[in-house]
Image (cartoon, rainbow, N blue to C red):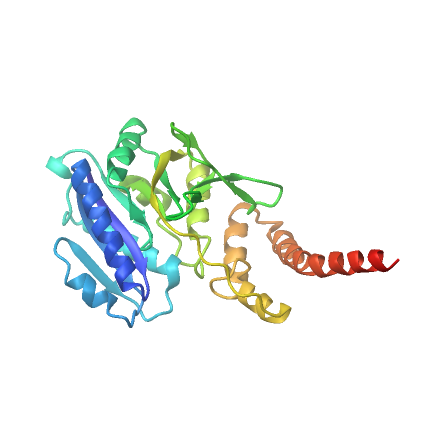
Length: 296
């Protein structure tokens, strides 16, 4: 099996290097030929220099700090697909298909991760395979495949991996294996998203094209969840929610919802914002009600 790892990073030099070294070790165990295309979005901590000093096939692309995850990954993917199209990277032994591996720079793969992922890939040719990760301390699942969880089209529930592959609706993009031909058919990662949702969108687009999306058995490595952010006044949290990395970023919400709900997308955007404020207001209201009942 021949694979190209695509990765986006920003100011996490040691973590990024550790992730790449872990991927190389897992590839050696599985006999996978691995190369890397890494998009460094203007890191100032020496990440690009550290990556350039690593041995092996590593292409480092540079951004100016405005690309974030979606556009950075889209750029890395496009470069990888171009290398394949131009014959600069060929399948192992001239046979089979090259696969793209999405890898977050904070994922540290198990030694046998590629061995197990390759088994799922071989058993399900032409499918997209998502790999679940676990917390390095608690061991609980942190990122995985996702299934629809409610009426809102962006309401998803995380799927716990079992000992067999499972069909999923979409996925977190921390660890994903995509055949190059499938990536070309889908049209690549959409870099129009501000930061998040590009992975969710990719899985949904695959489903609409009839491409199978599967969750690989077990967990494939560790990846801590993003730390909870400090509580702030409502106005500040609202602006953070709407920001480039926020779940309520309007351009990103509009982009993903228009693809599946061309006539009703605005209603879902409005409900997203209404639910945010309801959740923000509900705790103080409940606390006030408890206080009043105690007095009365």
